[in-house]
Amino acid sequence: MMKNAVEVRDLVVVRGGRTVLEHLDLTIGGGVTGLLGPSGCGKSTLLRSLAGVQRLAGGSVRVFGEEAGSRALRDRIGYVTQAASVYDDLTVAENLGFFSRVLGVGRDEVDRAVEAVDLARHRDQVVGRLSGGQLSRVSLAVALLGSPDLLILDEPTVGLDPVLRRDLWALFHRLADAGAAVFVSSHVMDEADRCDRLLLMREGRLIADGAPEQIRQQTGAADIESAFLRIVEEDAA
Ligand SMILES: Nc1ncnc2c1ncn2[C@@H]1O[C@H](COP(=O)(O)OP(=O)(O)OP(=O)(O)O)[C@@H](O)[C@H]1O
Image (cartoon, rainbow, N blue to C red; front, side):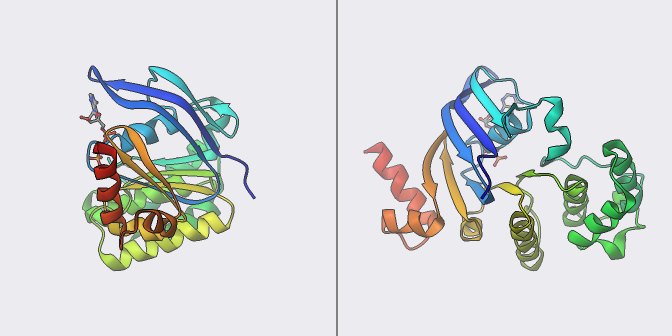
């Protein structure tokens, strides 16, 4: 059983003069952990903090015992942002070849990553001519190079068709079964049931934390969307 991959203590983040994350405490272990909440609630900001690319106004974020962003974590974390981070004028294979050299991982990792995101048929296609869903899978493939111990994925299933979404969630679980901690954000509540553990976020605070089934039972709601609304109502009362 994995010890905590991530430990967040009293995290405060201010962006554009506004407090976006308010005294957040959180630990993340193995399995697939989902971070769900409405647009603008602070999901990307929390993920950025874990990846070590966000300035903190207070508190601490440690990943595998090291301060987030430290060099020692570089090849242990795969981070995929919402913006594509690959080169438009290179093919899928060329992009992965480039990043594999940057990371110092073998060519076999490229083939494995391409297969994992189901892009083998497109490996020689220039990335600039791929569809949005294919493009986001190239970024995911880059993050998989070197088999990171923690994957931080910011809304990886946005714009994907239901079959691909299902396949990607199956991939996240395979990665988790192989020992990685997988942290995935989404604002689509119907993805909640695909997570082992669910964190519900609203306005910079975590309002629920547990297995999807547990959260439904606690609130007496039939689905996570209703559970979320009940928690928000109770919070306001
Ligand atoms: N570069 C920035 N400068 C100032 N404020 C920002 C910046 N980026 C985001 N914010 C603000 O921080 C808050 C949280 O944004 P964040 O991107 O973390 O939310 P989110 O839950 O990931 O939203 P979404 O689901 O739409 O991606 C929002 O109020 C947003 O306006």
